Image 1 (cartoon, one colour):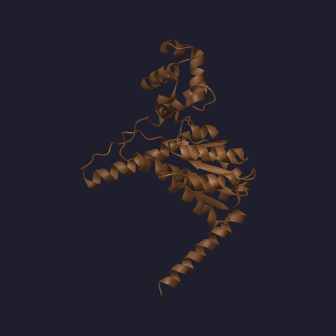
Image 2 (image 1 turned 60 degrees about the vertical axis):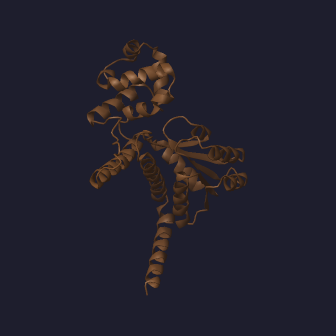
Image 3 (image 1 turned 180 degrees about the vertical axis):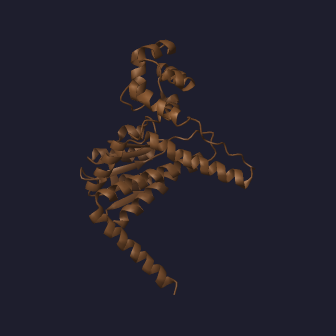
Length: 288
């Protein structure tokens, strides 16, 4: 895990996806984090008016190992003065200076929050699966297509077979051709994009390994995947939400690519250098 923090972020982002009893406990913790970290699971359940089993289920819903991990993460948040609501609302008609500050803050906050929900183990598993794949299919629709094409561009630089598809029929046609030696990478911020769900389902039928990149929490896309990568979700009231989520997704792709490059330096670094030299040579020629 990335340090011992991120408890409040996970609680806030999962709040509206929890069962009523779990949500009741989550709301109490969010309102009283300093108190919650001092309590036993029995005492917390008593104060929340729920069972101890509900508290344990809540930690599982947050992808944590237990109540102790939740308390440690919340304590880390309190030590670092982290809150679950650090995004700035953008005022339309505001000054350029205020827009610069608000958009930049939200982008940075999205990356910071994503670090708290991104699993080290899942990044390792995704890097290993991609490194061993015969072919990599990447699916994204709308704004997520931009992320899919960024994945393709990165892997094409190191001569890996990677295709990106934003059209549903192209996704499905490609998914049918996959094998158990391949990877299908579905990108959907909401995790509910029907085209991605159907394409990944077809890839799964062909035996491909599935990787998802969605906002944190349960979703149809993440539920299908063998390996789940998450970004922080941005409140719907944030006018720059789509921008901040895109930045967070690109950051995860960068993390994944650098992880792979670090593991396969002898193979990848020379290829990156060759593409850099080729592009540089082309620039010099076109400027003459």
